[in-house]
Image (cartoon, rainbow, N blue to C red; front, top):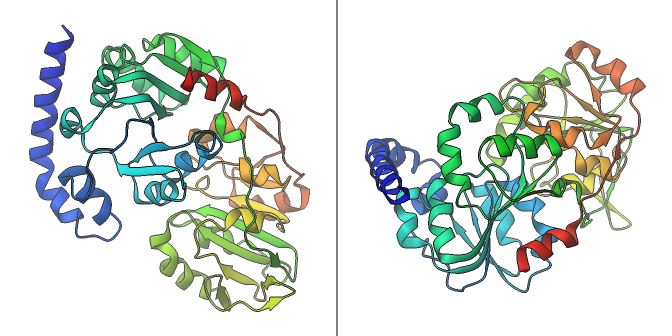
Length: 381
């Protein structure tokens, strides 16, 4: 029965690929997708991994970055990703061999044998697990979760997810609620291990000096910058805006200039005693990986992706590590599990309440920390 489903799924995926080819070719000329699309859908400069090793797969920047404490426990690893930002995050690991994960029709010819395949969160690709189950010693779904918003959609296709989970040896869930939901979808051998994104060990590479109380607009998306800046008293605070996607840096810079003189962190900042000085009231952070450095001097963090209804929020753990007060919008449905791990996040349902929230916000705090050694043991044993 498995082989018949495999053949049907492969043929179906092949026709999806053929149908999508014109669109993929068009997107491949856009800078945002050029590298990932050519690698994933045309295998350009994207050969199979050279070495039989532990193989980690994640989607984008946040998931790949969350793997750091685990990857550091291994001598060498293979990492596959979906997005350009995920690729850059994976390349930062000195012990890693990095690839883009090809589209599913290529996987039967692309996947080689490995020690264990470890897949992050909701990357439930049927062909990935089906082939890896046959060629790797073990398949693991790590940090598994099913959000409140996604759960009804998953249930509608339970018959499909059952076929995926029959190829997964171990499921490491974030919570008891996730465990129950995963069981409903056919998952077996589930262990609640916590959320690895609560494990955070910062590397401070640059130090900054602020001139006023500092507010950080972290991981913002389209429409959020202007919406938030309109409400802030820019004479009272310094504000650093950190867009989620680097391709928006120039766009956000133009928006910020409407509100006053704006400097860029990638520009020529002055230095005092080995620290970079933030002089202007408005600062655009147009350098990847700087949020953790800025959190060390922040007075308030306004967490983006939560004030528009099409994103679902972002990870609050990094800011909470430094006990910075965190303010969020009401649209954090993709991060509910992580929000539940942090005390004192201020949720506002109306942007007009922002200044009131800033005045009454309290220091955030991470509640629990994940058992990292247990995770590594399960991968290696």
